[in-house]
Amino acid sequence: MNTAFEIGLIVAAVAFMLSALGIARLRPEKTAAAERFCRAPLLGAVLAAVALSLCVPQTEPIAWDWLRGILWPLVVVFTVLGYLYLDFLTSRAIAGLMILGAYYFVNQAFALRLPTAAIGSVAALALGAAGIWISARPYLLRDFLRRCAAGIRLRAVAALACVAFGWYCAAVAVIMAVRR
Image (cartoon, rainbow, N blue to C red; front, side):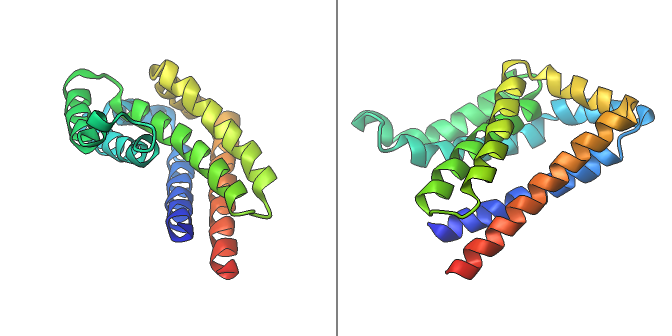
């Protein structure tokens, strides 16, 4: 269980660092690329499949008996349906990963008695709230990226926040590896 948490933290650290790099490189002339990113159906389908796959272990203990056997096929079905019918699929999938990541971090941080659990929980609350914000209106991620491209102050704050989250995830992964 600790190894899965450490791997998740490393993946999150890399994702945050790549996000910081992408946000820092935004410029008004690159707005169209950022908008295409939010709507990319193939990337969105891959991220949605990951998010839905993370839901299955959380759902199995509480699912009805008849539903347990079809959870994995439902991941495939809903990924394909999302690819075919949802706009802003990448934004929706990122929002789902943010919400699930926040939940998973808080759950594991307190279960494993992580020394920095309080700090991480506040960061996870912010991340989860941002995920809920994006999932409610997926075009808001596109609008946020537009604003980041237009203004250096927001771009710098957003990139620094991603770097801070990334370093925190990496530090917690190191702490977990040392504690083993």
